[in-house]
Length: 149
Image 1 (cartoon, one colour):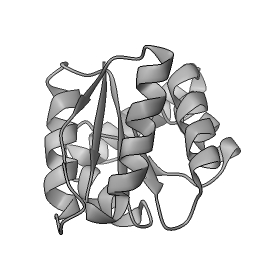
Image 2: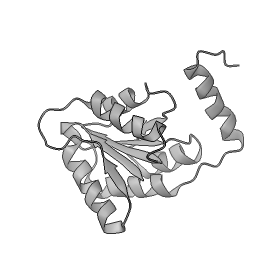
Image 3: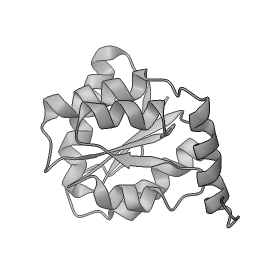
Image 4: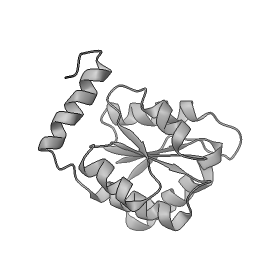
């Protein structure tokens, strides 16, 4: 299952992603917001990331105006590796090399077509492991307040 969430500035993009998931038969859980009324991205990020960390959802998509603010909030949740992406290469390699578990998109900076391509590549690219695992372990060490060398 894929977690979805947004603030008000990403609401319409989230709704388009929901329709895409429904058309493709992809299971999702919508953690809000549920209207285009003002809603804080930090709250959306926390709800969605808790769904990933709990294991209820495998990965997540978050939307705000730029994808940046919501990614900053998401990355404060221990165990989350969120990436704000605006192009195919970034979305592919944040999975393949960084094992990102949250994709963050900006409704005000990318169109629906690109957004859906990024969602597709993010969900269909597996982590390569190998030499990249060492770097993921280093990120976890930093998160745990440990030294990294």
